[in-house]
Structures are given as C-alpha cells and as structure tokens.
Length: 189
Image 1 (cartoon, rainbow, N blue to C red):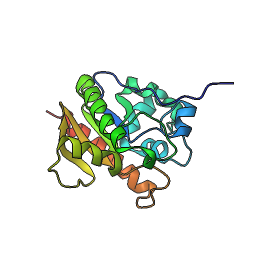
Image 2: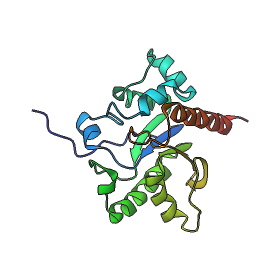
Image 3: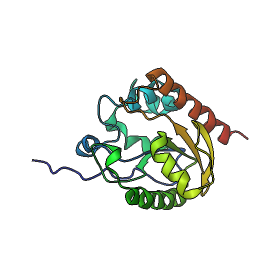
Image 4: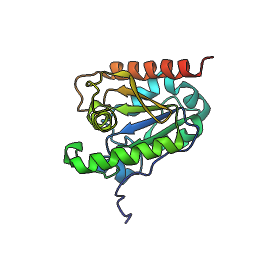
C-alpha cells in the first residue's frame, strides 16, 4: 500500500516563463502526486486548448496535457506551486496564519527562482498575497496585476475548479490565451 502524500512538491527552477500558483493542493491531487489531478478541475483541458501550451504539447507529442505532464512541463518553461503547501479538502480549511506564512514562503520562492510570470488561480489565494505585500491596493481584477514579487510579474486568472460556475471552460481557456499574449509581450524587444 502506498503512503498518502501530505502535499505536492514545488515544481520550480530558475528561468521559467510561467509558474502556476494555486491556493493549496487538494487532498486528491496530493494523493495522486500531480497538480490539478481531479477530473472535474478544468486546468488541464483548458490549458491544453490554449495557445499558451501549444509549444509544450507539440514538443511532448500530445494533443492534450494531463496531470502526469506536470513535471515534464518544467522543461518547457512552466512550473507549479501553491500559496499554502498543506493539502486540504477545501481551501476554506486554511487558517489565516497558514495563509500569512504561505505568502512569506511563496515570496521567497519567487524571488529565488525569478520566473517571468506568477499566474495565480483565483482571487482567493491572490487576495492574501496582495493584502500582505501591498495592503493599500484595491481588490484586483483578472489579468495583469500591478504587483511584482522581485522581478516576477503577477497575472490573475479564474480558478479552474469545477465548482467555479462563474466562468465557462471557454472563458478559462481565453484567460490562458491572454496570459500567452502577456508572456509574449514581455519577450518582445
């Protein structure tokens, strides 16, 4: 019998284009050992339909990326981490002290690895980051954020959770396409 994981490892290294930041791993994803592993989560299908993943899909020879591709994406400029590393059934189980400590740890990781963009999934986790790092900031909208963590630009997309009924899968894919445009604009001379 395999032992259940308590969390997911950070998939980070220097030189990444985009690091996807979730609020915390689900118990299911931690048990599976992959980010966004639950079938009802829209991350993998929407990311796979986006322009953002096109080069990685082509290089990996797949039409659709799946949770088991999370580690391979490091070689294609994408990383993964969370605001809080403790897995839980629901993000609402996280304490304010866990979230505050998580912001500190996340900041250290981003300043160390210096990805071009930190893409936050959902306002819930990002709200704690912006409150800690820029307490006078207004509640952010989706897209490019004014906040920088070290040299890393921040971008906010809707939560890909299947429970997020405010955004359709097409909306989610559109936000990854906008992220691709933003990433491209940062590389342009």
